[in-house]
Structures are given as C-alpha cells and as structure tokens.
Image 1 (tube, rainbow, N blue to C red):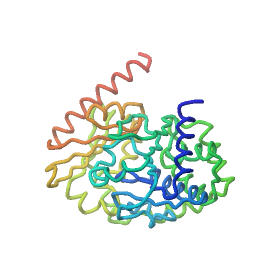
Image 2: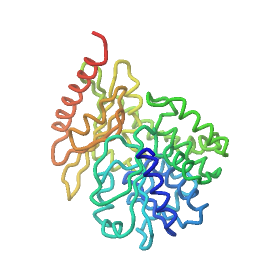
Image 3: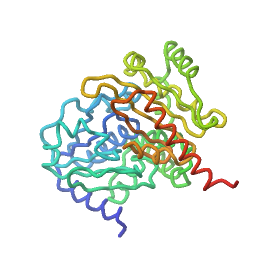
Length: 342
C-alpha cells in the first residue's frame, strides 16, 4: 500500500469514529479551499456526520456565489471530534487561526488534505493526506472519496469541478493531463452542472466601470525586469484599503501581465501598513516555468512551482522588490540554462 493510500485509510478510520467534523480552511480562502470544504460538507454529511466549516477570514465576494458559502462559520466552534484542514501548505497559511485556537485544535485528531508540493511542518501531530501530483485539493478529495467508497452527490460534484478548473486555469496548466479531463468528465456524469456554475461565477465576477478603470491604471504602471522576462506591479496601501473588499487589485492584472509577449513570470507586491507589523509586503507570483515556489521559498514562503507567495516584514517596497527580483532573475536564468538548448 502506498503512503498516500495508507494515509487515506487512516483518515477514513478517523472519520468513522467522529460524529462532528470541523473542516478548516486557510486564511485568505480561494476557490479550491472553499469548494473543497463545501464538497466535504456534502460527502461527509451523506455519511451521517455533522460538518462544521470555519475560516478565520471572511469568504471573499468573488466566491460567495457557491451554494453553502454562507454556512462557513464566523465564530470558532466549541465542540468537534476531528479537524480536516484543506488546501494548506503549512502553519504560515493559518497563523492567526493557530494563534487563537491551536490549544483547542490539538485536543482532537487533526488531518491535513492538501496538494501543495512545498510544505511546512505543522507544530503538532497530524495525519497528512498529501498528493503533490494532484492539481487541486478538490481532485484529491474526489480521489480519496472513491478510495473510501464515499458517495459523491450531484451538489458535491458541482462544487468540485470549479475547484479543479480554478487551480488548473481551466485545465490549461502544464501539469494537467488526461487524468484531470477524465475526473471532470466523471464529475459531470455524477451530476455536476458546469454551465450553471460558470454562469453564476461570470455574473458575480463581472467588474464595475470603477474596477475596469482601476485595471487600466494598474496596467499602465506595470514594470519590466530581466530583459522583459518579469512583469511587476506594486499595489499601494491606499488601493488595498479602497478595493480589497470588492476585488483584489492584483488579480485584476496578473494574468494579463503573464500573457504579455516575452514575460515568464508576473509578480505582484501588496503593501500593507498596520500596528503589529508596521510594513508588510505580500508577494504573489504566476509563472510560465517552475521558478515561483523556489524563489518564494528563499524568502520563507512557498506554494506551487508556477504559483507561489511569500512575505517581507518591515522593509520598504523598494528593498523588497530589489531582493525578490534579483533572486527571481537568477532562478529564471538558471532554469533556462539547464532546460533550454543554447
């Protein structure tokens, strides 16, 4: 039995023993983490389990259209028998959650279901169901459901399809193979309605004229580095304060930056000002080559080969940009020298 199959079997045993299960998301939830949670609510609920969902942060507006998103709790629950943490590469992705609730979380069994290839060790004992080859956590949940013999109803299937599509950019990233297309087809056979899901997504994510104008201003500020291989944008504290609750400004332009001719990596830096940390710079990368996680790991972050993030504390945006661009440029050049013919 493989390590993954053994871990899935162990998780199944924990689920069998539990009556109430807490499904925990990372801070800054996204489509994959939310739809994974909602799908688990359906799948485990069909097995007679009471499922509670919690996230330290509010569900962002762009994914609130998913049925059940309003059931994600704002207050941490007091009674549960098992925690399943989804779509989380390590404790840095739920630092505030652990700061407030680690003592309670460690009283009961704790499992992690995730697909991030770069990982940080949790500060307490956990059962890890990790498949770095899975393109999304939804994909992994579907596979473990099949291995454990769990029924996947139409609503769960409809939730997992957008999770897979979101993390694979509509099945277009390099790690996607025939397997992912087959999984989506299986989910459609189980009742997933891709058209309805897409229509709901399109309607709630239609941008206003104000956001369209912001997008134009941001694109006009994009900088180029490394001979055009890196596209860079800095989001100001004022822009974040004004727009973050409506739409992440960086997300408005990241894909356009990445699609520009000659660009290998798009980089966005968001500058936050606060009390605990006076200046905090959050970095997001989207790459056409596997250099994102490697670069972000050099600054204490991580993620996927082609999509990763990290954080700088108490440094200026100029210094953070200088350090990160230098490291990223070196990694791009190293990759090109070893993988492309001279």
